[in-house]
Image 1 (cartoon, rainbow, N blue to C red):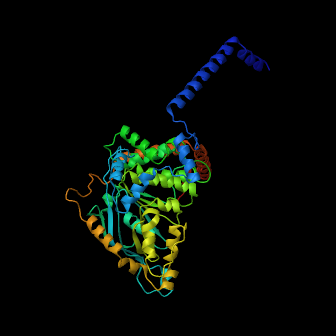
Image 2: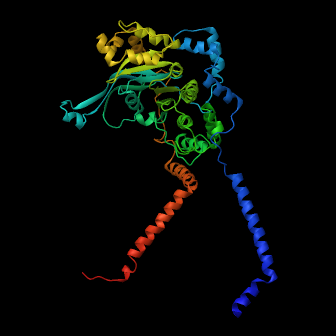
Image 3: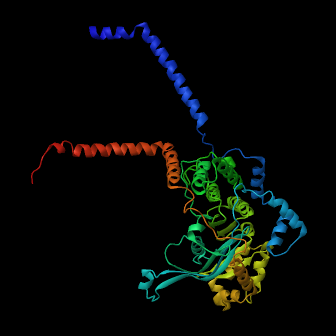
Amino acid sequence: GIMVLKSRGIFTEAKWYWIGFGAMIGYTLLFNLLYTLALSVLNPLGDTHPTMPENAIKEKHANVTGENLEDPEKKKCRKLELSGGANQNCATSNVGSSSRRKGMVLPFAQLSLSFNAVKYSVDMPQAMSAQGVTDDHLVLLKGVSGSFRPGVLTALMGVSGAGKTTLMDVLAGRKTGGYIEGDITISGYPKKQETFARISGYCEQNDIHSPHVTVYESLAFSAWLRLPSEVDLVTRKMFIEEVMELVELTSLWGALVGLPGVNGLSTEQRKRLTIAVELVANPSIIFMDEPTSGLDARAAAIVMRAVRNTVNTGRTVVCTIHQPSIDIFEAFDELFLMKRGGEEIYVGPLGHNSSKLIEYFEGIEGVSKIKDGYNPATWMLEVTSIVQEEMLSVDFCEIYRRSELYQRNKELIEELSTPHPDSSDLDFPSLYSRSFFTQCLACLWKQKLSYWRNPSYTAMRFLFTIIIALLFGTMFWGLGQKTYIF
């Protein structure tokens, strides 16, 4: 009892009041200083639904009401140019618009891609062999030919199982198995996957992004790894900002990506982020696998506007698409239509209001005329189905190969397969854009952000590590002091 009273008496002395007061002041200054420093240095995480500028609100209103903000004269000129016509007013307009193109901070080579008689087959699956199929290989592409050019947005369409994604994967070099035959050239030179990977981008249908990084950080990570070392940090940041403006993500630069369907960006915003992640690599050729899948009409229109902006920079863009609306279908310049079995049945321009496409198929005997206001994409898929082929006793592939359009495409493929005298083949001093050390540094930077912003995951890993350490520690406690003689 005496010791307790004495200890209490010690802590009731006046000096302890001043020590506590000083500690309180010190901790207050320390924590406020650290808090202010953190807010000044670290980028605050933004909202996924920020305030929008006036022009963005007008564009949203146009998407909802169907109003067209594009100058009718410019749209007419673009369609006239695609159909092969020419106009002096259009030429003057194009000169003015080309000077205002976006995404041109870093130069890129405008490259075309042509392919002739491309065949793709795989080993016959065991399930089909068990059903009595005697062939050794299953042919997925039966000698398709075509070309994709800079500044032209091409739609790759067909029914399910036609081989749209298969063709795009073969051209992009993503098919590592199977057997590929035929010629694929890049601006006249034979395609080499090592160099083609440096000038191409691929937007997958399933959006895969790290949930605990922001939109800007996702783009910075991609640009850090994929842009050449000659591009300094200032130029890289400028290019990232320009790409964000191109796909209309500037207002979301500080928003966390989040988990799909849980938090963070919406599905449509994720699609545009996928496009932006590929664009910051400054590619010349971009493949997009169904960029509008899973989106409503308004969201699909926003994504297609971003795709159209990408094409307007002069890049070659190819999109697989399934059952588009009339507005989405009209956004494309050319169509590559395939039938089930991996054969092409139409390769050419769409024309104004799909006039070229409608004129071609209505010229085939027995094909029903399209109704007023009917979706040309839906009508096209209906009249070219296998059921219609059997009813009409025709083969749309043979009709296409005997058409004048096929001959023009063959001439174009032959022209694009010949290198220009002043051009040279793609060549890079190294296999990858950045060194191994830079790649490790970039990956560590992104992983640090991911773990730092997910404390629950990190805490659970610490907890499981401690529990497992205690389990193994108690199981083998003291066993090192025992000696066993065998």
